[in-house]
Image 1 (cartoon, rainbow, N blue to C red):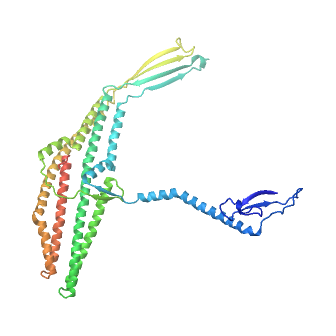
Image 2: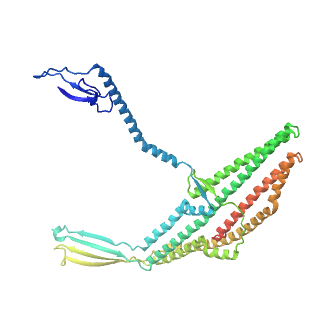
Image 3: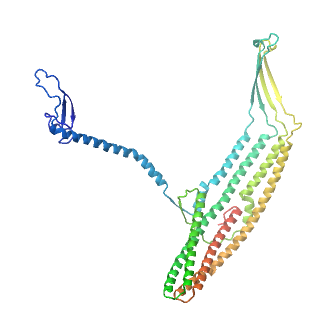
Amino acid sequence: MVHSFFPGISSPTTGSQDSKCGRKDCHWVAFVLHSPPLRGDPGVPGLSIPATNMTFLIRFIHCLFLTVFIVGVQFETAWAQPDSAKASKQASGTVPTTVTLSLDDSLSLFLEKNLDLLMTKYGIDNAKGIAITAKLFPNPTFLLYGGAAFTGKQTFEGTRYITPQLEQMFLLAGKRGYRMESAGYGIQASEATFTDAIRQLTLTLKDTYYQVQLASRRLNLAKDNQERFHRILTIGELRFKKGFIAEVDLIRLRLQAVDFGAQVIKFTQEVQTALADLRLLLAFPPTTELVLTSDLIYKRVTPDMERLRTEALNKRPDLQARRFVLSQQQANLKLAKSLRIPDPIVGGAFTMQGPQGGSNQQLYSLNLEVPLPVFDRNQGGIAQAEIAIQVAQVDLHKTTLEIQNEIEVNFRNLIQSQRLVEAYQAGVLDDAKTTFSILEKAYQKGGVTLIDLLDAARTSQTILQNYLEALFDYQRNLFLLERAAGQDIL
């Protein structure tokens, strides 16, 4: 009796033409169990597996294991694909990005992303919250009384009573209006403080932006000097080998070359430090590469000082904030004086009594509660409010004087730095560069001494570095004058 068939092993009766696995050596095998022969059945052996087909069984088992292994590897690979994609995405997130920024682009990003400005802006929201509180009326009060008599053979059912009561405080003397007025000035003061923070931090951003440009110009100058002195050192070594210069002159050349190399390292560090400060102001990660396009150049300006003085005293946000604070303190004084007048509390009640509680089992009552201003008439609060007004007045006067002095000092510094830059550009820079180039060529031909060459190199380097400093100081003094005036000049 044949019970089941399996691919891979052939019986003597199946043959290879019944293969269903696509291979010529894949046959069907029949497992035949030995059973008593039926009538007419010639009998069958217990299990008929030809010896020649054992190799097919082994091949089938090998194919089965190989298939399971391949499927497992593919499943593991497919399972790991999301993790590998996530890892590659995270790795790509750490790749440094390059951002090209002009000064105007930096200012726009600064106003959107600077963390100090965001924290200052929360002060406006806090002041608005105080204004919401100032508009609110006092909440009513609900009271519930109840009781009963238990003496003299009184019972709870006969003497019980319950009294619900509702009370409301009424604000007099304009207290709510003064609070709203004070809160309104507080919002305006917070907004002016936020605008002043923009004014202050804008100077910080501009200064940091051009600090990067100054350090970059210094670095380029140091690299040029290093490269030029490397050529001079090479010529000096050749002249030393030929006996044209002494060993001490060669040592001096090497020392000067080392000094220029040290300057390259120093200015490289300054560039990296300035870039890090600029990234922090713009809330960029440390991996961001910044490319700045607004170069440090000279633009002569002639500001209208009378207009700047007038508009600064009218529009500078910190002065406006001081004025709003003074108005707020004046409103607080009016509020403090209004607190001398007590606020009455008016209430109504309804009493329900038992049959033995009184002739009328339902009573209506109206109550009035008024504190008597005998001792406390808010004398301390009024005195504090008056002192706060005096402090605000002094602070306003102090800020006004500071603005006037800042404008004058920064204007004078701007004029002096302007003269210095123009003096350098009048011919000093070209003279320094030309002198060094002439002496360099003369030294290569043996026309001047090494002392003359080194002196010309140091002089040229000092003049070029001082020019960059003067150019940066002029730009900074211009920004300081803009900050003092509270407006752009260019």
